[in-house]
Image (cartoon, rainbow, N blue to C red; front, side):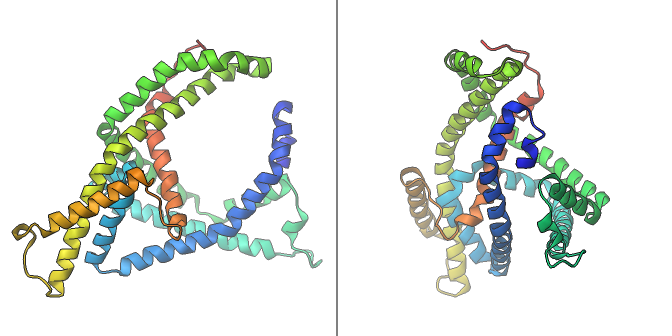
Length: 327
């Protein structure tokens, strides 16, 4: 951040310089926690793959029942991804993972390199732009650009296909967000406009209108997706409860504890509705908290959910020049 502050406009340099300590702490935290979280996620995925199919399906149903409302778009994206066939995307992810591991190995070796044999690692003697340039060169020398380009292109194509499906599926939510944003913008412009004009240097006032529009979209999207989340909570609660109860009944049949089929009894429906009601209660009245021990595993899913919500609602609108002035 300090290196960037020396190359930034004067009005931004002071803020970057003040934020440098916080950015440094954040970067150190990511470097410290990132590998641990990756290993934890990999161990969780491996443990999930080792589970019997019935148990895994039951755990997935419980997760959907108690937390499904928080990840409405992510679940829908996964269903769309499965229906479109995801084998090629999995190959692309594997290719990117191999490239990432190669970069990490090279980074670890670079952190220990002492070419001048003075007892201090070379990277410890670099500051600011020189260190960034060294790491950028390391990445460029390590990765295979053809593999990265092919994998990134495959992921982007698949993502656009899934996004198209999601846009049709959440058309009502998109329309609600658009309507809220359009009606909110004039009021926000009147309230925030004079203050922003007063505190913004003349050369940068052209950014006020896009900033107000972006703020309106953020607020409108949050409201619209919250409304959708309430409806999805009920659906995911009961669907997840039925999946879990039927998996439990199948597990009991495998253990020869019961012999009735799903269509011969109401036991799976009764248990599923009860589990679903508990899941809905937890999500609506308790906030649907993720257990603390599992919370780090859900952070990437939280980020993915917000990114998908934004792209589903605004990705097309962002590509259309509005040309509107600040009202």
